[in-house]
Amino acid sequence: MSAACPLYAPFFGFAGVASAMVLSSIGAAYGTAKAGIGIAGMGTFKPELIMKAGAISQKISLIPVVMAGIIAVYGLVISVLIAAALAPNSSYSLFAGFIHLGAGLAVGLSGMAAGYTIGIVGDACVRGYAQQSRLFVTMVLILIFAEVLGLYGLIVALILNTKADSSC
Image (cartoon, rainbow, N blue to C red; front, side, top):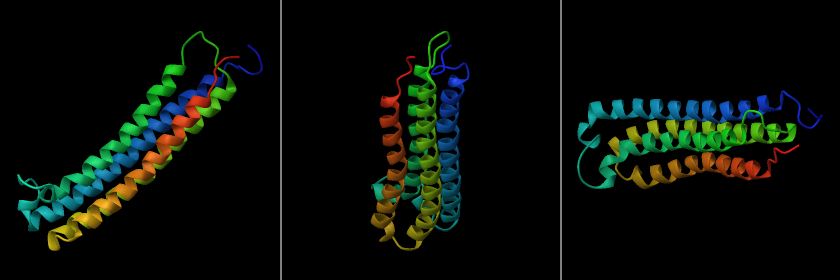
């Protein structure tokens, strides 16, 4: 093994895989749980707003939960891409390991922040929508901006992943 490809280099790649999946899933789980609390709170006062057939504005309570779940998909995509570069009995440079760790942390930490944001906004807006239906457009816009935080992490991770050259 050369100095550019030490035996411990794949550790950093696997740490990137774990960071991407675990941290983005924590954000998605928190967002889902927090928005679910809002749905349960709203459902006690306006149960017809939970699952009523009709316009999308009547399914408002599901939007934050779906958006939180998408955050975990971002982490899954990067985890699969990084794991594809890791193979037994092949050369893997320390540079690639650090790049993959950075990519995993980028999508994981931004996914965790986005999930927290979606959960808090989803909880408050779903409850607010039960009292005032004009909050619908505002809620969707705020949730989109929160989702974009996770998307930024995905884009940075994809760019970083293209820079990783695992050859020694």
